[in-house]
View 1 (spheres, rainbow, N blue to C red):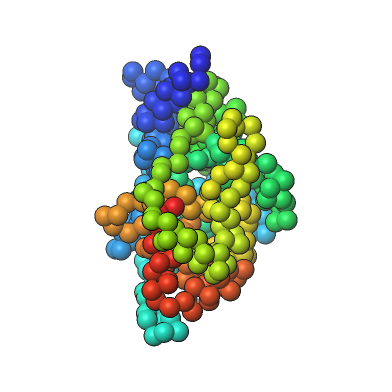
View 2 (cartoon, rainbow, N blue to C red; view 1 turned 45 degrees about the horizontal axis):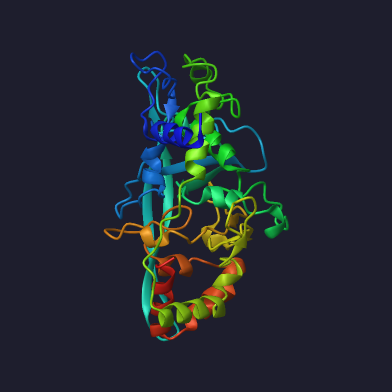
Length: 370
């Protein structure tokens, strides 16, 4: 099969609804669940984009995932993800109630802007049995475009100073596009592959014993095709600014210190005719302070390192509502996202806040054209 045919197969699988094992006319698309978050890749990453934002009243989009961990190690009773849906005959693992606490941030010039902090409550019979040290890791589905280009960045370009396990995911927890794809099939859809041969059942023996759709459920040719499809998704182009606005915005981006982590340029290898990309990330992990850190169920803050999120494609965020930026979608605008930066980004945030209002707007407008 040539690359075009493989790409088209991957696109078809990406957009397909998977069905429970044994469902009639499922062909090779069965094995969903028994617990899951979504029945298709496109449900969370519509057209390869990031998930839509949570609503002001706390309604969560399907592209929101509550990952779980265990502080100080140990097995996670529910597995790596809280699955809020289940196929017929099985029970979902629980559901999430989201609420916000809102506060005002005051600039040195007297201007104010509102920021909101999310708080999560987990409900359900199995959730109530989780120990207090269970780590809650709320995550929005990231955009998929440009992943193939990020995969082509040599490791020497971003180093291993933070001992990153990979280059994808909010905390750089996955090694490659293929690893990211197989992990999502397993954790969010309950579909195993040769990479992740078990469903994300935790210690639930009933879940683990559910009928399977094949061995593996995501065949090698399917996994390869979906990986290739994502790897070749192009970064959408933004409408360019005039030369003066572009130069002023780039200068402010560098002067505030934003470019120290959101590096405007990275080298790539093995791509004909291309030697550098403008992803606006250093692919490294950084401590952004307690405000953005993950927490245990008892509210204890856990030290968290975040991969610098690429800014390319931000111009194509939906303009009809909130953006839902940062790892948990709390930030309704680029400005609000900046104001949440602390820790290693303290100085950059403070410099941004000290800018005259007109310059802050010029910088924000420039970022929104990446």
